[in-house]
Image (cartoon, rainbow, N blue to C red; front, side, top):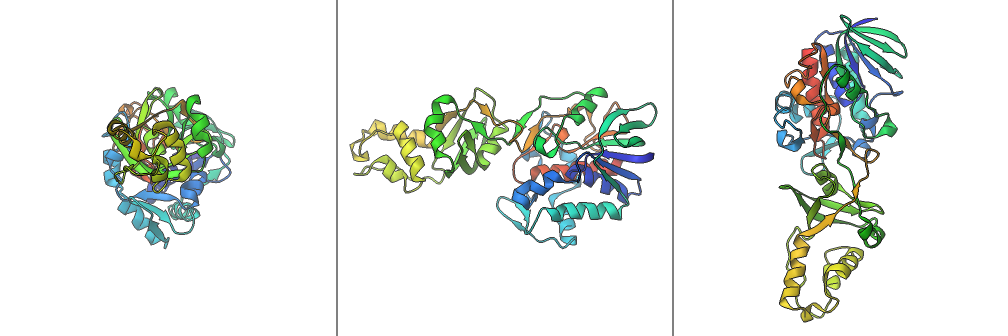
Length: 383
């Protein structure tokens, strides 16, 4: 069966590319190996889909080529996607820091994408496995439902995160097959795990959360940190994890709002800090870092030392929770081998890579959806 455009992957990037190309009159087929499209969209944002971020700019993305995403992001902006959301009557709200969510359910975003695909006469097939993609002239795809030919193929297969939702390495394998380079691939936006020396003290704090400012390699995030049985999670940790490497220590400001704590008095440091921290954390932290006596009895050096650690608490980690708990996959198809305007492989006309499979990874907070829409839009205009 012959099509002008075949999109591999029915996630955010793939569907948006398909509807964009379909609006231009292209005959588009989307192939999704799951039993339905948009599984990752469905669970995102706690089921409400953090579908974009008002502040998305190239500075919010990690890539070995930081400027690559600039063109696509400029041609499809958060305001553009928000206008599409509002045209479908979807109610939304800004949670914080420019993060936009559906008021009701992420299913509304999936419905939007499918409705727009239907209007553009895009065909969507689910439950289709890709066995092989070759290019004897046109592209030839051998699938679990027979052979398909196409003038252009768009790879929107995502990364390795969320294997339970069907994530796999097809996109990376296709890139390698056609001679494109890959950058280092690793889990991103992922919880970090304790060292053995810390697990006994910090593991029992599971469920405790507090605001922090975490810093590393000149990057800082002021968000909440969450203790788990295995390590640290929460927005602050997920954000900084994309910049962290094994063997490196992170620095935490545990009182990002400031405050002259502890102050001389009859109370212990734990009693004072329990007024601004959860009590369990105050007790555990002070047992390791504060003199076990009333603050009034501390020397000036002891007081200065504790205050210093409060604002620059160093922590080392054994590793990450890996792809099963990672929100995204860092790295991917090397952007040196792609056109930033069309997402097309420079050496393989008609072959495009978009979304998470590309070496462009956003911060937590709607940035990766915005990259999906923008890169899908760029390829959809070009195929």
